[in-house]
Image (cartoon, rainbow, N blue to C red; front, side, top):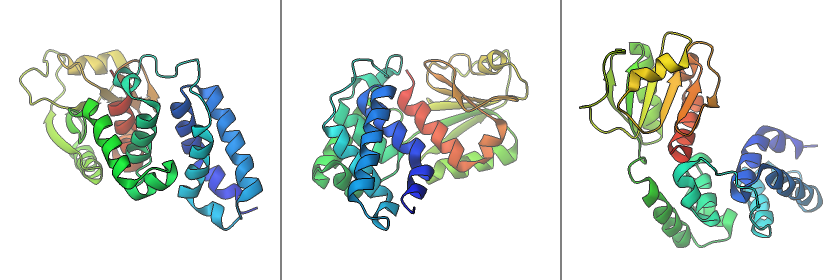
Length: 243
C-alpha cells in the first residue's frame, strides 16, 4: 500500500517528534501508533504521501496526550526550560525544517502565533542560533565541506585552529559550537584539543558513531564531516540538546 512508503521513510522523524513532545519514548511510541491507525482509517493513500499531513495527524494526537511522567529531557540543558508547545514548534522549525505556514497547519495555530512562540523559545538559544562554528583540525577539503554545509542552515564557520594538545581555545572569538576533527581513535584525546571551551562539542574521530557521549559532547564518523545532511543533523541536535 502506498501509505507505507512515507511512514517507512519518515518513521524515525515522526518517532523522535512524538518522544520529545511527550517527554517519554514509550509514551511517544504509543501516540505514534495511535496516529498511524488514524492514517489507515481516515486518510487516502494519495494524501498520505504528504509529510506535512503525517505530522499534522501526529500532532493532533499529541495535543490530546498529557506529558509523560518520565522526563526524557534530564541532562538536556536548556531544552528542559521550554514548554511542550515551544518544544514542538522548535522541533518542527529547526529540526524538521518546516516553514511557519506548514508549522501553523501542523499545530493548528495561527502563523503569527507560531512566529511569536518560535521567537520566544529561541531567546533561550540566542547565543547558538544562527550558529557560529569553530573547527579544530581537519583537512582543507573538510573545511570547505563544513563551511558549505553550515551555510545551508544559515550558520557560519567562524574560525579554524590547528590541533595542539598543549593549547587551549582561549582568546579565539566565542563560538556556539566547536567541531573537532581528530586523527586518532581515543575520544578523550580528541576532546582535550578543545580545552577552555565549555559549550557543545562535536567530535569526529576514527571508529566513532553518530552518538551523544554526555551532556555536551557528541560524536560522528570522520566521513560525516563531508555529509551535509548528517553533519547538519548532528549540529542542530548538539546545539539544541546540550548544556
